[in-house]
Amino acid sequence: MTPNEKHIDLITGYLQDSLSDAQQQEFDRLVRAGKIDMAEVREMEVHFRQLGDLPSPEPDPAMGERFHAMLQQEKEIRRREEEMQQEEMQQEEKNLSQPDQKRQERETAGRTPLLRFIPGLFPSGGTPRIRHMQTAASIAAVFLAGLLLGLLYPGRGTHDQQIQQIAAEVHDLREMMMISLLDESSAAERLRAVNISMEIPSPQEHVIFALVQTLHFDPNVNVRVAAVDALVHHGSHPMVREELVRAITRQPSPMVQIALADAMIALQEPRAAREFQKLLEQEEMEDPVRDKIEQTLLVLL
Amino acid sequence: MSDPTSDKALMMQVKNGDLDALGVLFERYHHRLFGFFYRLTSRRDISADLVQDVFERILRYRTSYTGNGDFATWLFQIARNRHADHYRKMEKENEWEHPDVPHPAASNPAASHPNAPHSAGPHPAVPDSALPDTDDRLLLEQALARLDPDKKQALVLSRMEGFLYREIAEIMACTESAVKVRVFRGLQELRQIMAGLERQTGRKRIHPN
Image 1 (cartoon, rainbow over the protein chains, first blue to last red):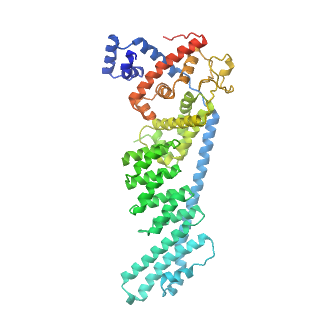
Image 2 (image 1 turned 45 degrees about the vertical axis):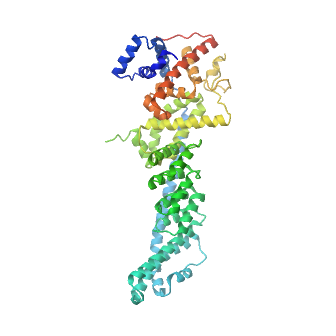
Image 3 (image 1 turned 60 degrees about the vertical axis):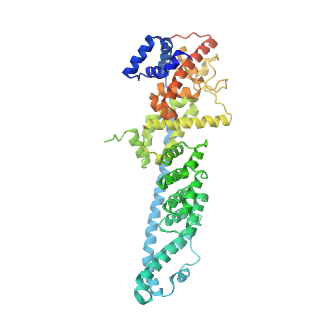
């Protein structure tokens, strides 16, 4: 060990010209006292300076072209996504207008128990989109027809009871629709199903289970990310936290891993810390994911 | 009010969907990143791939950008991790990187051209050089290429990229003291390697004043 090794802090500060006045005085004192070998420091200083003088290599112009091609491609993907979102919104608007068209039919047919009556409204044929539009329409129809029923037959129970009954039926229908959409082959439909689940205030066990299955097994990463958000929405359910924590080391997708990190912060779930630490031990982890998880651990620990 | 053309402001724009802002950041940083990777790998093709990889990741994970800390430090953190992944992958696949030019003792001067064919040597990396070399510069580049990765990174980030020790500690995920030790030992080692190369090639280095 050379004498200079005892003063690495001062010597490296001297090399980078970052010594404070007090440190500079201490450095000078040690040099005068022979405690710092200035000959070695000078030689280091020369090499250090020379390193800064080495010419930086010039990148090929092709690198810029490659980057801009990638950027262009990403912009195109984004444009398509926006178009799809717009189409979805238009579709939603159409769905909302559908009940108005059917209201008159329902009003004349509303004297039988509603849920028993509904299967008759759904023909087995038609595209999934049409079937689901019909389901959506029926939810509103059930609600409206129920109201009408209440008005026509006030003697069959209190108004509040009837409203509660209708609300329960709408709730059930929404769950049915969600489960049915989750079976669709189209990722957009499954995404819709997950979004519908967020509109269900207190979902039954089988709805939570379906969301958990989606989180673990859906082939589409966007659907899995949406499932994470939906499960956070139902974070008070006992199964949810456990399954979200379990998913941390199971999910290969960085996007889902980031969504899970956000979820664990939102739920303040300390059990997640251990799973994230396991994840950090994996060598092939994407850098932004690693950063995100490290930040998450700071919050959770 | 913050500067809308600052790195951070541009990155926030990227995060919010204005992807063109990433083009500005690319123009600002790709040269430096290329230099950084080149000093670590001594390969132009790998360095270009790694730069592309860094920007691809920024683009893919733009929504996770928080805006905390200095942008350049964050960028070089990603760059360093990308290099580490690349290094591990190469080790796993047992694919030793062939530098763009042969060992310095090789007699063919044309081989120092960046377009010269790759050659395998006993050492992992000996850099190419597009400009006519002085003996000293060549020697220094060769010695730098032989330093161990951590010391090399500390020296490159400190002297060539102009980061403070505190920032390098953040990039290298270690303490500031560890960075200083790496710089110190790196310079010591550099001197020894250069002395060895001088003996090997029979050259005598001219020491600048």
